[in-house]
Length: 529
Image (tube, rainbow, N blue to C red; front, side, top):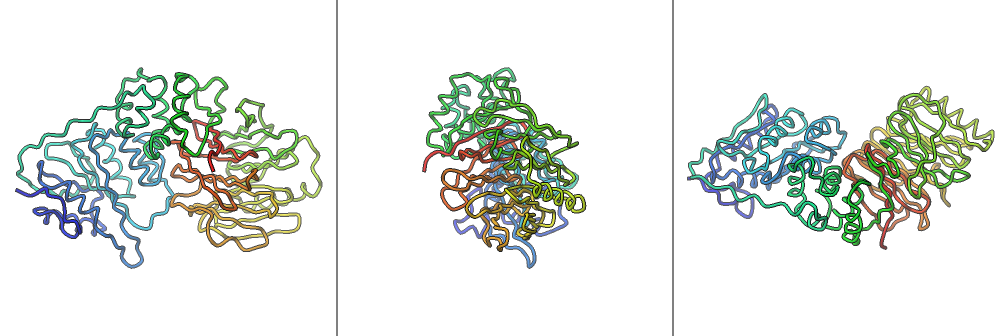
């Protein structure tokens, strides 16, 4: 009978009795034409789990000119399809609200990968929803971006794909009972929910009857669950859950979660979600901006995907009307200026000007007219403005600062510039983000700072910077759902994940952080030194 003894500590040899299966798996891994799905089958006790653990522990060196193969081990025992989707999304650097979203997110992601990714998925037979998980994995096998090794016990329904490799350990071990499924915590108790295994909580909420809202905890968890599964400890989960609560939630939940979130590096000022009525949710967020001064000081500009730009009070998100503009279609960036004018970039990369109530100096009119003419021939991908300058990014990785004293340019990114922002400070600077995942600083007229201010494997999706009481702050968001608030001159960095994909961020004059998604707008204040 093949042994299920774990691999030796040095990880160089597979478990005794699984050597033929190990050879077959290594052959599958090194064959570029092999099917993208490999099933490791066999009876209970045949060494399947130990074999996948051994495979995960092996060093993976890429061939010359190729990146190394990343092997990600994910246990499926006790997990439902939603928990598996969130676990994989977090490991692969994408955001997925539902299992159906995961394949699309991977297929369209611009995340940088240095080599192939292989998912090693154990114990499909012990999943809480084995059939739904099998369907999820079958869909992933067709995306073309990853390879999957799935352990399945003989007699369990396996994922089905157009082409599949099967490694059968053909064990003759006797039946092995499944361990009892752990019981979820009291799903109406916020303290118990935040202290429990988040994947267990996810399974509990996902399989609960639709009318069991648990005071609003269930809806909040399902809204922000991917971030909750990645959060550190009860305090981190309490903060995320607090920001995801709808206004109709049980009022006793907020103080309980706020107390539990006390060690977190943030305090929530306010949050607005789809369906909220008091005050109403402002709609999906595509772009954000904070007014730079004058009669509209203290207002937020919140643009949606249809091109509507709403004005909200920074203090509590109450509505102050809409921006009067005639831009047709989606707005991809906006840039308020000190004189009340708002510059808009449309989805074609063209510039539009919405004038404020104060008259503009003639030199600024000439500047924006010149930039508008340039972008009509060479579309922009990102936009920012400070006094006397308009900053534009392009699809080739360059940043252009059009000023009254001339044009300055730099090429800090590999690939498209996805966001730019500019700060009026003692030494004005430009901050840019790119599809290459980097955030970089640049003072026009000088060379860009060689080291990135921040870097992740996922593309930067939003960026904003502003002067703050302790020095300029930069807010950056990436396509993997992470947001960071970064002191430009050094200091403590703070991170936050709202759960849904982040569309826009902004820093207010008081140093607060705004995070916008398709279904929420959250305002957080940094806390602690």
